[in-house]
Image (cartoon, rainbow, N blue to C red; front, side, top):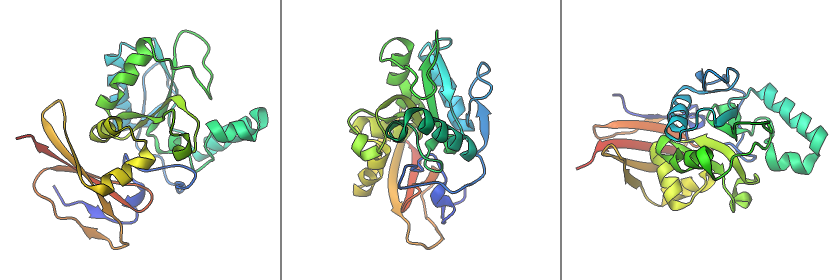
Length: 247
């Protein structure tokens, strides 16, 4: 496998890209998308995220009990949602629960809003309780690479109100590390800047994640043998993840 290459274009790609009011996305092409499941033909996610979402819903016993509400959105669709919410609910509500166009995670194809099945679903604030299949999904999410993106108590950090229905795919080791440390995505990069972080997954693989600052110079990183993944943070650096067999 070739060595990971740091470049400006890579800075805005990968499962850990940070998207918020301070870190917007350029108007880029859509990622490789896949239907979440057959009953929701209009809800799409990035290919890997869609596959792992299905596995997590299945493990939680959620078929027919959990419904996908909103996945990938184009910039134009995000603009329509913002304008409609602003008109109907006012600016204070819109800023709490709807991201500005270009500042929405939904444009990455890595974010999914989920709702409880069995009745009418609110598109902006779908019900997703702590009990039943929804609660089971919440407890299993990190095993499949998903985190609750806007947890209660982190509103000042994320700039978004608590959204118990909004999940973000970041990848299995990072979801585990974030959950164990009680971190949201905005805090995770500083956590990795302190020192590399390691965890051992259920399949026996040892994973190490470290932060690599971007100095503006395109270059390749030297690595030991192993499987790796490089993700930009859409800000000032990269997260390098390396999988090795546990001793």
